[in-house]
Length: 293
Image (cartoon, rainbow, N blue to C red; front, side, top):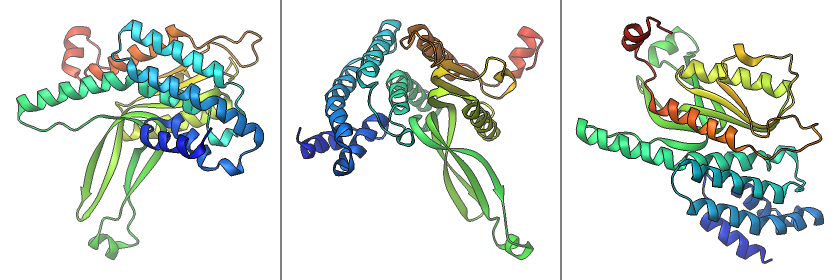
C-alpha cells in the first residue's frame, strides 16, 4: 500500500461529515508512529472503508428498503473492523456510528432544505440551510462585564458551546450592541457511544440539560451499541428524549447481536417526525386535545 496515494484519495474524497474517514486519514498522517500491528490493521481497514463509503454514496433516498441496506452495510463494515485496536481516546469505533448517521439522514435533510427553499420563494424570503454532522452547539448566553463602567461600554457577551457528535442544526449570527458572534443551533443533537455506562449516562444527562436550555425544541438522543448501565437506573426523568441501543443488549452478553434494523428504523422515524411536525402550536393542542403540554 502506497501511503501517499492513500492520503491523496482521502484528501479528495473525505469531507467534514465523513468523521470515520477523517479518523483513518489522521492515522495515515501519523503512519511512522504507528505500531506494526496498527499498520497491518489499517491496511485491512482502508479498502473496506472505501467500499462502505462508496456503497452508501450510491444509495439515495430514505425508503425502508434503502435504510435496511444501509444497516446491512454498517454491520458488514463493523464486522470487518471489530478487531482494530486503537486507543479509546481516538474515538475510532464510535466515529463509525457518527458517519453512519450522516448517511442515514443526509437525503432527508437535503429534501427538507429544498422544501424550505421553495417556501422561501413563495414567502419572499431566503431560507437558511440546515446542516448535519458533528458540531459545536450553542448551549447558553450570558453577559460578564468587569464592572459597571465596562458595562456602559460593552455588554461583554459570552457564549457557552458544547461539542456534539452529530447534530442537525443551522448557523445564526447574533449581535449585542457592537458585539457579534456566529453560533450553531441544533434541532436534533445525538451523542454516539460504543457502549454507555453509568458515568457516561450522567454526562449525557448533563449535556441534554445544557443543550435544551439553549433550545427547548431540540431533540436530544443517545445512540449506543451496548447499554452497560444498571437496570435499576431509570433515565426517564432526565431531559434525554431517547436512548437507542443498536445491539439491544449489554457487552457482557455471550451472544453478540448485530446492529438491529428495527432500532435504526425507529430512530430514523423519530427524528423525521420531529423535523416535520409543529414544535409549538398551543391553539391546536387546546382545541383538539384539551391539553397544553
